Amino acid sequence: MPVVERCVVHVREPELVPDPGAGRTVRTFIIALMFVTALTLLAASAVHAGLLGPMDPFPGAAAPEALLGLVLAIAAVAVFLSWARAWVFAVIATLLALLGTVYGLTVTLPRGEPGDVVYHVSLLAGLILATGLLIRQRGLVD
Image 1 (cartoon, rainbow, N blue to C red):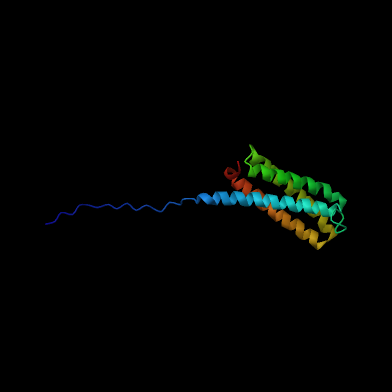
Image 2 (cartoon, rainbow, N blue to C red):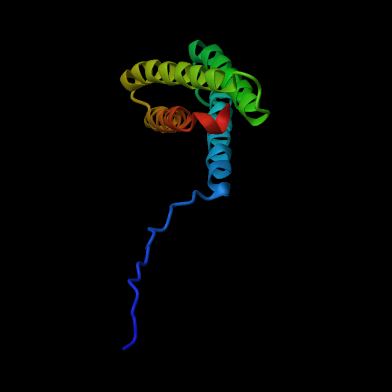
């Protein structure tokens, strides 16, 4: 009579191994989003200052948009170059731009210019996304 030994098979669930390139992709997306929002703020500032002609003169918005665009651009460079405290700087910069955009929207809505409203809502969406990603993905930035 053949002897059959007790056989135990251990089955392991496949482990979820994160894609090493995924973090780099999210980090690149955050930086790109910050740069795009910064550039749109700088462009809006130029339009409102009349630097591109009499498209939509609104001098009261030109300086704040330029300042927010500059701060966001510097924060994006800080993240790109992995400066010390880049995450803190980037979060503060995006939150500041977010608050400024909400204020800009409150000024823009009563004016009723559809292009301005769409711009502010789009910028707001981009800033909310950038802020959310920065908060969720802190390890990718600092």
